[in-house]
Structures are given as structure tokens and as C-alpha cells.
Image 1 (cartoon, rainbow, N blue to C red):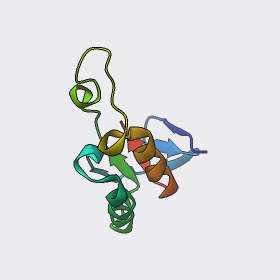
Image 2: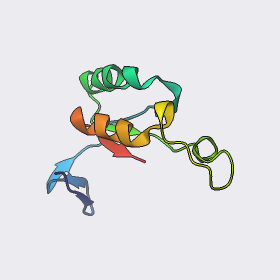
Image 3: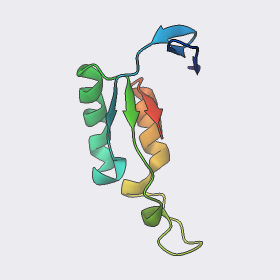
Image 4: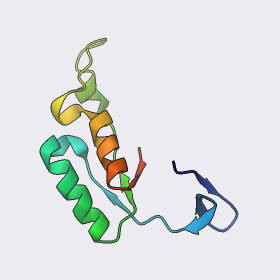
Length: 90
């Protein structure tokens, strides 16, 4: 489990000063089968963090009607990020 905090000079990951090297990946623009490969390439390029946002109009196309599967399975995306050991800014 990771802990992220900060002091007056740096982010602290597990109480160690850490530079967040972050890239943006919009999970809903890629097939779920592509996520692991894309995230692994991001990590290999030196990133330790992924930024994404939630396109709420896609997840709730009508009031009270939610979609969380396929391209919109954000839980699976976050679990995949974790398995590749990438932090996420959501």
C-alpha cells in the first residue's frame, strides 16, 4: 500500500521525497485489452503517475442510468495502473 503526502518542499511517497513524473491517458479512448501495454510503455518511459479524468456524460448518459463496463470500466483501469505500479491522479 502506498501513502502520498507532502511537506513544504516535496511530495512524499511512503515518507520519501518523490518527483511525480506524470502523463495523461484517457482510459475511455482505448480498448481495455490495450491498457496494460500502454501503461507498461508509460512506466518504461520513466513515468510513475498517470492522470486521467472521468467523462461523466459517458458514464451517466441519462439521469440515473450508469455505464461502467467495457471502455468505461474505470475500476479495471485503476486496478491495471496499480498492477503496473503507477500512481493515478483522478
